[in-house]
Image (cartoon, rainbow, N blue to C red; front, side, top):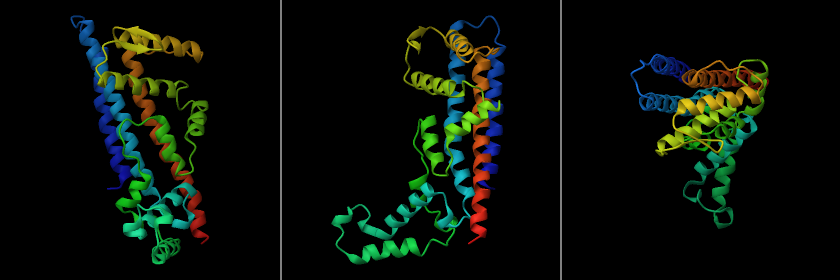
Length: 266
């Protein structure tokens, strides 16, 4: 199974789980206390964040896989640069952690030069080892939009422009980046068990109250009528996150087709 198929199956499964959570919150019986309702909404925020983080890590493997059959010399510059650095470290052997001025063996530099020069016409899949992946894939926790932006630069994709274009086309909501930042920030606050909910220097007792203010702020700032309730707003963010990763894969596929032309001309 390809990594893209696996990723697609994963997203379908998780979307269904999170939609179920949204339905539960939106149809809670009146006998539930505000505290109980808020605990469920907190869990919903954490679930949505977990979806973002998991997709962040999984999409990297999907994108990386799309370049498996690309010639090394035709890879996007940033990706090729990291790959060559990985090859250089591999060829340097026990000297890889040393500064250049500390290496006094000519054969080390010879191996590095040969390792790079001899691999220009090989495929990325020929070097898909742990060292290479570690130099490209970001496996850290708590990723932000900026982290995703940095990763996509490896593939010559300007994520800010991608988002801007898709907001203009109506595929992403105009407040996408703002609410993604809100989800990440609030998940961290929940994880640290902060008693008070903070948003723009205001304090709230429940996330229902907080997100209602968020909705009002976005409606004013973006001159847009937002008809979601608090749980609906979080659910919509799930769909927006999902759509972003679909857009990213499509963008990379377009870049990859451009690269195929270069491969065929070599």
